[in-house]
Image (tube, rainbow, N blue to C red; front, side, top):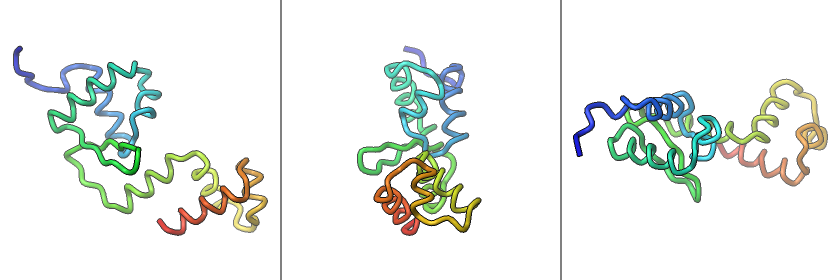
Length: 128
């Protein structure tokens, strides 16, 4: 087996690396959807990039987030990125910015979630 001169010589690895660089904190399934890669193929190449220290992971509960190894991110930036990856959270934030005079019931209806879920999301936002 010959040594790898540049782990990013392979186009698929370069695409994976660039996608993680573009979206720090991306998780596996989202990376898979964006790149339209088979699970096994993506898993193999991600592990190769991890082994060669081009990517690093952070675990939170059952979720694994991927980052470029050469960049350090502030905790607040990572927390905001994780919040914005959730579609409902993004919609709530947009509503809070655009429509300052809405009550909770109106936001829940516009976003399409229950008032209980909205309450949970707002609590998460407040904590972060």
